[in-house]
Length: 372
Image 1 (cartoon, rainbow, N blue to C red):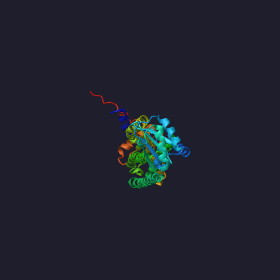
Image 2: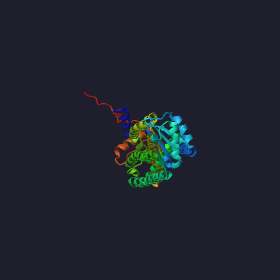
Image 3: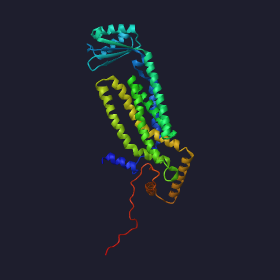
Image 4: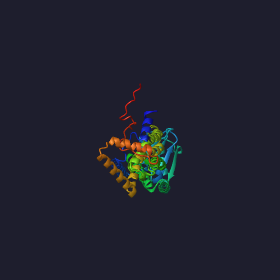
């Protein structure tokens, strides 16, 4: 078995672990800081909306221009009087986007670009995009997002419980806010491909969250019938038990997306690949983070406000305090809790910050029988 697989098995059995729930205030603070940064970037820089949303003209050349991309950009700005986006295509041609251009103005720009670029006017294709079409796309995207959120909340409330549905919704909003904020900070153009990427990451973001929630649901069956484990401890065990699986699935999903972003978009200069891959890359990373550091800790916080769970925690803490007063060591307590976990088939327990190696029952006080 590989080292990572061995670690995953030990995490699943509770032999080792990290106290994610105990340090949830740190994760909340980090998430709030990242979210505020994303919102500030969105407020200051704003989104670089593509021509599909603003309206304008797209000029595409079938042949290679006689000028460089930078010179073509200057020529396009001079001919239109507006900012232009110039991209080099795979066949050597150019794609020039100019916003807020009507039909009459587009014809003038096309004629001027033909002279500046040294390309016959017949070799330049001009496509006009009206702002009303972009508005329809934006409205449909918002409607799709709203419907998706409502369906997710309803499903999770039925399959699990409403607290988990709220926690998952908060994690989704967190992921979308960060992704949109990154777009504002780096200045990437927002196109229909961006919208597709944003809607796609919602499913990936929920995947890891639902896996942890399912483990937590199984682990908390009959939780009030025992006095060994608090809800937070079981939630922590659920995160640790699925941690390696979450890391593996996230890395496997990020590798091809990173190839699209850094090779397809960065090296080959494919604009549409940038639009889709950046939203996927940021969204996948944010989704893996939120499922571990936001969604599950938030469920634990909400759940431990219930009277029964709150009373259970008080009983457990009182029992541990009494045991400590009797001189029982922390290591002995962990061993007792581990033994209780092995014997109790109804409740899956969770360790504290770090659960040590379980001690095997040895022959305490036994002496070997002498053979004659």
